[in-house]
Image (cartoon, rainbow, N blue to C red; front, side, top):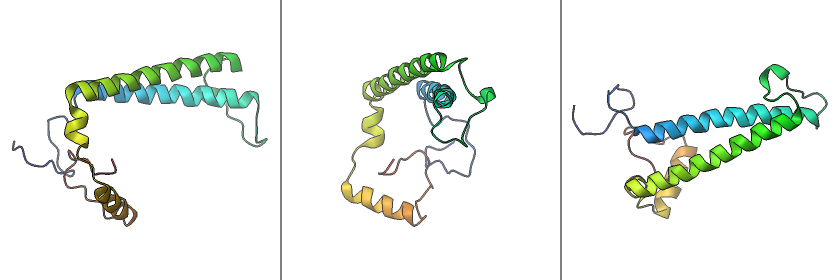
Length: 131
């Protein structure tokens, strides 16, 4: 296998992101599901729109106060996970390798390309300036 650019249409056995980043991603995904489910239960306690009510089968918590506890628990996990992500990014130098240098002209050009649906996706290991 060569060290050239990874094409998005091909399959490669190597991972694009290291294990700690993949774990942090899934912690975020699960935490967001908990936040959404508990948020729906909290919303059901004081409905703003009469026609919008979430079924109990897709909410989290027995009552609104339980949902608030779930909501705050998930919020803290999300915050700690974000701090771990920042620490990992700075400690390993990943932020420096993947994100620098960023030029304003490159950001404007990538935004323009994205709005025109012409953003290049040839090398999925390389972030564009907007990412």
